[in-house]
Amino acid sequence: TMFGKAFSKIKSAVEGRLVKAEAAVLAAETEGGQGTTEYALLIGLIIVAVIVAMTLFRTQVATLWSNVTNTMNNILNYTSH
Image 1 (tube, one colour):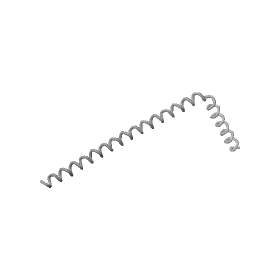
Image 2 (image 1 turned 180 degrees about the vertical axis):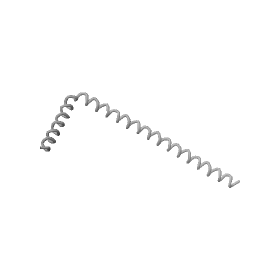
Image 3 (image 1 turned 90 degrees about the vertical axis):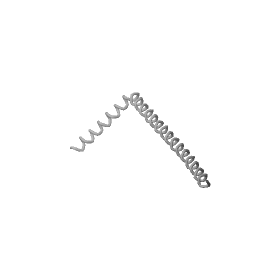
Image 4 (image 1 turned 120 degrees about the vertical axis):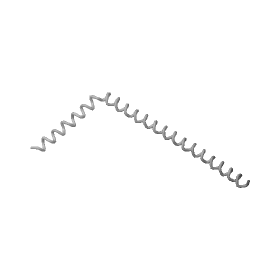
């Protein structure tokens, strides 16, 4: 019948759109997962770089903190008199 053919065409068009929509959703999820992984790797690399820098400049950092602490103590002692 004419309605059967029209319904069949509409049904196949809708199914085709659904398949395309599902493919788009899967592609977006894959790209999102890939982006998250890239951010995680970048953060990991930054953390490793900070640890290496802290290890290499351990003495300088310790001296800097010691100077800051001494300066703060001097300021506090000066203002308490």
